[in-house]
Amino acid sequence: MKGSAGQIHIVAFDVPYPADYGGVIDIFYKIKALHRAGVQVHLHCYTYGRAESKMLKKYSATVRYYRRKVFRNPIYNKKPYIVASRNSSALIEDLMADEHPILFEGLHSTYYLDDPRLKDRFKIVRTHNVEHDYYRQLEKVENNVFKKYFFKIEADRLKRYEKTLKHANLIAAISQNDTSYFSRKFNDVMYLPPFHRNDELETQTGRGEFILYHGNLSVGENNVAALFLVNKVFSKLDIPCVIAGNGATDDLKNAILQNGNIDLVEGVTAEEIEELIRDAHINVLPTRQATGIKLKLVNALFMGRYCVANSKMIDNTGLEDFCVQADTAAQFIEAVNDLWQREFGASELAERKDLLAEGFCNMEGIDSLISRIPQLQSITLEQA
Image (cartoon, rainbow, N blue to C red; front, side, top):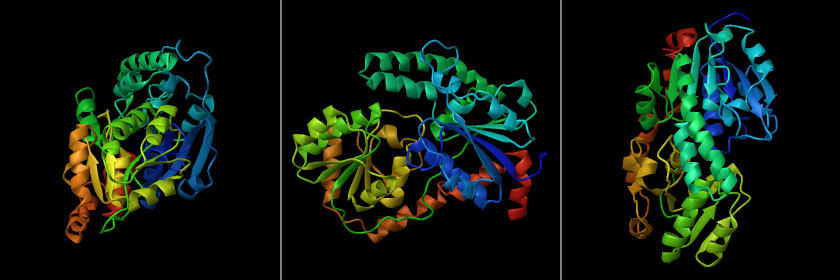
């Protein structure tokens, strides 16, 4: 194959289906949008626990898998562990088989970004976070001594390694804040909103049955957020509350057991989480990290009714007007008690529909990306 228009390589840091957590959600629905736009995707996936997926063949011209390496000692390596563990001689050979542009998903997948063999290729990096900031926050909330030290070392390595992005022809940042950050350091940076499952608004009018917080509870940040809500907010309410997600810590389980109005829902699929979002009256979403954009916020607004979130979750996302902001426990309690008395009405639903037109439409996003890739620009012109 030689450089024909309408084809692209995507290097994914994980198998992007099932689309059941933030990073792979963005990848999977980006692949779907590219397929819908007429672009042939050659997908390359690193594997480390997730099975190969037949669904990916539906939207990709080719799908190849490479085993992620596991190091006995993840500390002693010049490159970040998340990068060094994702290198494969088979991958670079596959990428060199043609001249199509290459989209690297996340800093994780950029081991070959500066490889001289790819110096003449058009290379895009999709940044999912300012990774060293993300790992610094993981360090702050981690209690395990070894993991805490690893997160510290990894954050330092990621900060040094970030300069490798100068070898990208284009950086596609997932949030406005990240776009501003990378634009100060690199020349060709665009804002590309997150891709998600929502083709249309699914929010229902009327009342929901409970207050909901959802997330992967094994992640330190989410565990801290859930503990904050259970101990400081939900326990002070006379309202049914639900914490939903997998991997709850013993501390979280014990805190929930002390409160009769709070239920823990574990062992849930992505579809079951979506059903909970739709059934809830209020989705409550605090975070301690301001990097990236949380897809749980996008999903809550496309599928759920009211949303209460803190400033780190919503600032500069374009979604501020659709949420009630709360930054302290007292503010969360006040906001929840107020919204619990209301019914989500038709006028609020009409305002919410503006979400699709205000920058969170997958096909608008993919058109924007295609327009910046020389080998794919003819597709945009043909469709215009």
